Image 1 (tube, helix red, strand yellow):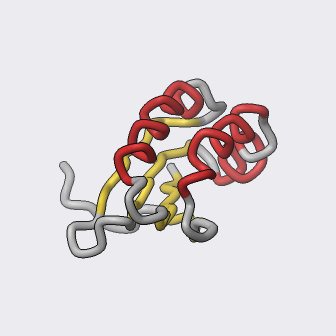
Image 2: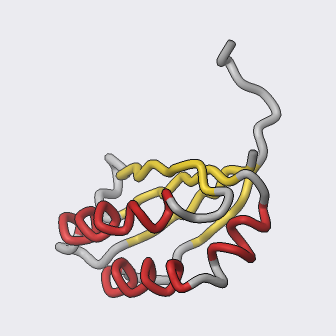
Length: 100
């Protein structure tokens, strides 16, 4: 399992619209090949900063399958207008957890 962490800074004053756009885009992630869901987190200290945390079966499910799909184009059309700068994306794998 791969975790994608995207740090997204949005234009000031567009937070609610961005959150609504991400909610509207939810089905795009849910039907993506290898997609296991996502969470959107909002920074308390920097309210225009978000982190989208998505789970993928493989790295390629995100970097090849999703990014190369029409659903990715639709995702960017929905949320891209709110970006203050391009998102910073990295992928991680779990090495330790407290879950049982």
